[in-house]
Length: 455
Image 1 (cartoon, one colour):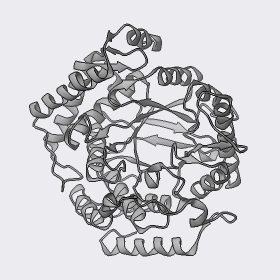
Image 2 (tube, helix red, strand yellow):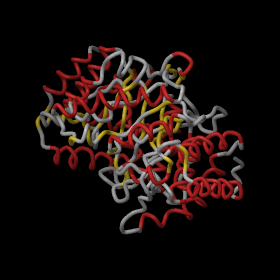
Image 3 (cartoon, one colour):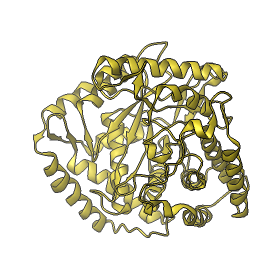
């Protein structure tokens, strides 16, 4: 189908308010499907193994999308999607994709539960507001790590001392500066050809279109195309998708379904996540997926419910319609806290054993630049250890419950657990972790070994 057919369909949809869409269509249909398919969530089952529940979650997601369609935010209209279109897009989804170029090129691929292949690591904190002086050193701290395969980044909040403003000249210049700094950082660590997910400073069409060019985002790179909450799309993301398709660049399909929101508990939220990823195949022409559940109370992907949604999405697609899926890792805690490292480990175990790849780390909920290369190192090491130790889903679930006991208290802390900024956790000249942070990392690695995960 020509992409403009989707644009026409969105413009010619049924007029309704967003509240009407959310309540009368999303909430009511999810409630019906959860009951119809007998979908249940148990808080001690982070990594499900009930094959009937996995299958029924997948079937419910297809039914949801085919029955209610999608909502076009920019015109306030509901438009429909046919079941055969959903199924065709699932069949035609990419199962391999080359990112980057030269010696740094990497092939993305599908994984399955308890897979024997190592998960790829896409390092960075997409969208995290970052001052210009910390941007390049932070990227270098990720890019220099051996476990890292691809690179992404935060968004610039200032450029040459000026505040970046949406849809203004400053946004255009911030996007181009971001990409220039990314190129400098990867070149200086000897990995200039790394595939990128970038132009994170773009929040409007101005920034999206400013990102394209052979010295900026190459066809072997990617840019986010985003499904909004829930099962909704706007004009900016349709323009972005169309631009990427025409240019030949990869579309990174981002889906951020809320856990505890319109989908209800994690069982219903997982249906929403799967349906949104199916929609992303169609309306955003996703070349690969970024699965990013957001806890409505705690934000972090480290909650029980979010990790359940990660696991269910990876397992359901792997079994019934393989897709390339990266699980976003956005812990509540920040650098120089032991909880950050435990949260990273729990996310890595869950995603890896469920059949996903790893993207992150968006430390401190990705709200402040308190992320470093060291927790990304642990992310990759834990992912590989899950494979090397041949963890089953049941064993992984037991381990994650033990890790939750070590960090779950952060969700009751009034100010969260943001830790320290990059320049306090790393020597900004040598791009190496300070002794305190390195010692904490070594301690947590030993603890993981004591828990049975040999690193």
